[in-house]
Length: 182
Image (cartoon, rainbow, N blue to C red; front, side, top):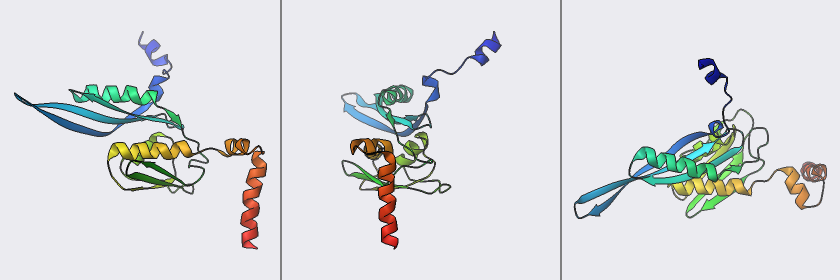
């Protein structure tokens, strides 16, 4: 019976890892004193380009984390990747938070701080440079990073939007680089 449990294949939900980005304790002052609630910001991802985030609120920390994790699994997006990095430079904004993300060469690693590091790591990006401007508020930074990721498209989608083949679009970009050199 024990061997049967070991041989089971993991479910789809088990493929996701979740990380707690921030937990906030919120106090409500009432007649008898203070009532404490907890708010949790959680990021989930499979390390293969799928990532999501969620916020959960509850009277206890584990309940808040569970709620946030369930919410995060409902808001999953696909991040286009090229050789372990993003296809091009992008700026994501949300509120006063601005996240600037640059593609990096192979082996550079994840150069990102705060909440963006968790999002990028769980999204399966291995080489990227990020800078957060404006605010360090975890929720706004995560939302700004997601705004940036939603702006990304791969070369096939870009070529399809312009009614061209990916080779034509790629050649045009390289021709411009060659003309500038010569």
